[in-house]
Image 1 (cartoon, helix red, strand yellow):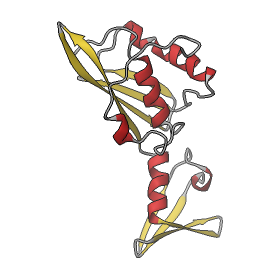
Image 2 (cartoon, one colour; image 1 turned 180 degrees about the vertical axis):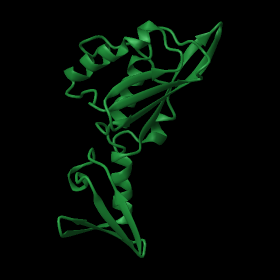
Image 3 (cartoon, helix red, strand yellow; image 1 turned 60 degrees about the vertical axis):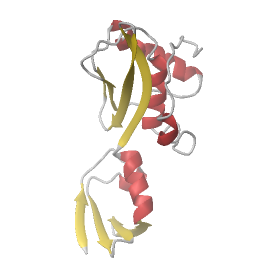
Image 4 (cartoon, one colour; image 1 turned 90 degrees about the vertical axis):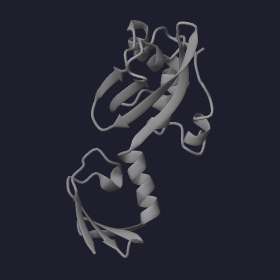
Length: 173
């Protein structure tokens, strides 16, 4: 028997308590005790819940030019608890302004930029990224990392097979 206390107030309904007591029995089920009520859940399902709540990371690939060479750029999007938007990896002003274009375009299709902490890393970090061709790459990363597009709809393994590039207009075109 392992005893774990989790202190999180940003989790889904079953995890919303300030303090949650979790007991693991035989590594097959988890038992939650919330307000003297017991909840049991299987470990694989709990693992999936934790991935959705705590470990939201998505990788999408695009490219940029360095001289006459095309260089693969990995756009990693992490959505976690908090409220902020960080874009790192030497983006120029057009890429930094993409937050407004992406947010407006997503709203036209019924999606949104989540009210959470979003960190977007554009690797390699030592190369300057220029232009607005990263908009769609960043938008897809945000949708996948925030769970608005499920892993069943677009699996991470499938995203890794494509280079996705394009600018978004405010109407989503």
